[in-house]
Length: 90
Image 1 (cartoon, rainbow, N blue to C red):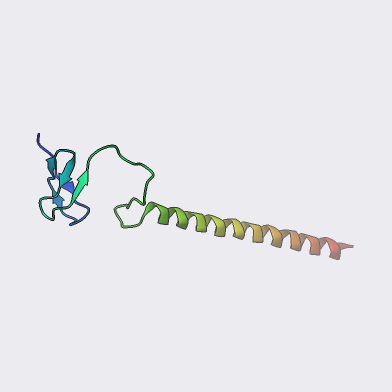
Image 2 (image 1 turned 120 degrees about the horizontal axis):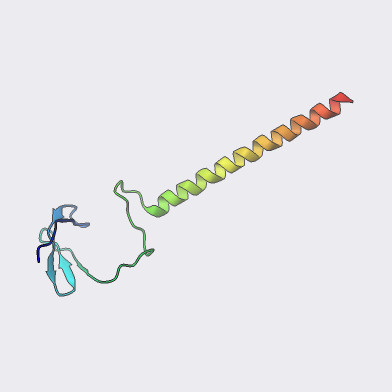
């Protein structure tokens, strides 16, 4: 069975893993891992730019909170200005 080249997470090279039983081994660095079912949602997977998904989720959450606080401040300012304008009319 011909395997396609894959990226080794340990030595960071594109290699063809050697398959023995239920494990795959990198021929360059000897890194091994078990094949089997994938565990989605476990651990922190890394994107290609080196930033983990949880880091990007945290960044999104912080930006969302800052935007919401900004909108709240604008609404408070508009209400305050409206109240001042109404009290000066009379």
